Image (cartoon, rainbow over all chains, first blue to last red; front, side, top):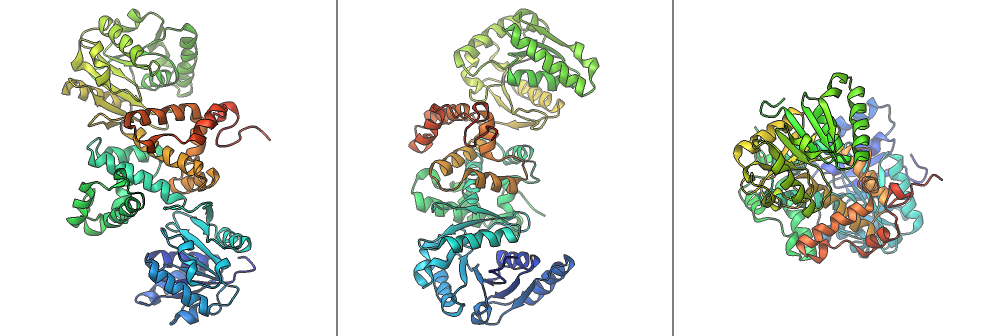
Length: 274
Length: 280
């Protein structure tokens, strides 16, 4: 735990929001959570706190019924709502009005630099991108500044990440994908090209990946888990950004998505699932 | 062991050639190792003998024969793997010599990482018996090999090649259509290219990207460390070959990377590359 941060607030409690909340509690932080749709939160907190206690941690997770309640005593607020710029700006503004003046506001967005959100708050020197990858498997997070973020705030964000055993990946200059998602996207893109071009079977590519890295799954299996609709949307985002025909996702992927073959969640994607 | 293949010839005993020989020797093959340079052959012999000793396969040592005479290395052979430098005219010349000297049934494979055998096959008569079999050294830690046909390679030849790769406990990665990088090097090149761009664009520090890679994959080295190990001159040359193939300006290696290579910052071998390897 670091001195300057005791209470962390997670706004938007989807998959990643839950992971961030539990992981922070595990490292002794008091965590406030808020979601406009609180379905399942009680069960989540019960389960998560059981695991937190098992690790002898003093952390806590508290469900708040309003955003105001969730942020009014927070030192660090992490917004983890859906990837919609307008929505994020609106929530940032609400947080700004209700959080203590010293609190840092961070977005967990995987695609929107905080510089595009900061316009909606007054505390422009206290905003950050803190983008987590899946916890607890991937203990790392991109961290980036807005245009006016102070060094002090950036350092605090970094230290907080280190205090929860998460490696900060510093984004020095804005770009789509931040640090690691850029590399991961290059892998996905090449795999899609190999598959759509008929250069090799996905099974062989996955085998090669597993042999090379020692991981238990390959990129095609990974994409099936993420969901091919999500993979397609992300590819489209890069294509929209660059306008390079080379970035256009293959038609075969679109056809798969249109057929509802979205991966593990629908029972069929690149592979079939029982 | 593969029934159709009992004798193996490795032509070119450099970095990968000697590794293929050492690995295959573990699996009951009789192996002829050829190199035109007797010093290189001597180094290969030491290496292969060392591997067999370490793996407690001393009895296999006498099943590996060394020669600077191509005729001798090809007299009795079922599968020939060419592992000479990546120079197309040289490979064609060597293929033609192998074709003249090896028994008619023998399969000729190239370990090239960049030339499809379809670009070499003209040099031989036995166009139905040629293959790409490309390894990813170190073979024991990356037991896999791309396998690809020429334009006239028979199914039988292809199956023999595949089952030979499996017989030495490597995974065959089938190239279904000619492309630069074959199966895995294509993917690995996409990683390298992205990393070089992140570095050149100043988006993140190499240390952070390597850390992320290690966390994500569980590997003990990230892409920049691996590239520093391979040698940035080699990485640059590979990038150029992709650029030449596509002509796409986006495939052109960044100027900063070119300058790094020109300054002689080639990675571990020169003490500096993406990282500084000199002891502080």
